[in-house]
Image (tube, rainbow, N blue to C red):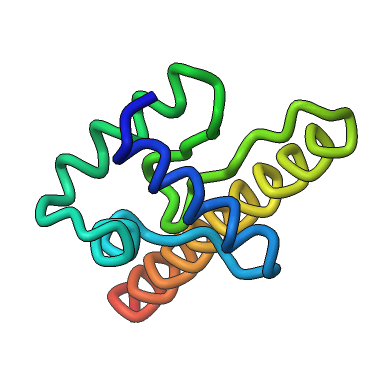
Length: 107
């Protein structure tokens, strides 16, 4: 594991320990003094491949530290379900707006 990956992982663990939500890619860049978000993405992908994090790329704040204990598995599963629920809520909201627009156009 590189120094940058260690810094990112330490930051993620610190946030989780303090009960704070996972950071965005940009927040990781700022905290770890990385000038490019693409460098953060590369390192988060490496952490994911190594099994240290789960990353749901299309969900804001979708990086979860993987705990290798059964309790940690439950925490990760709960976090994943919460994120899926958020995505579903956003999709439902968009569909409601489309229905309202269609109803308005039909008048």
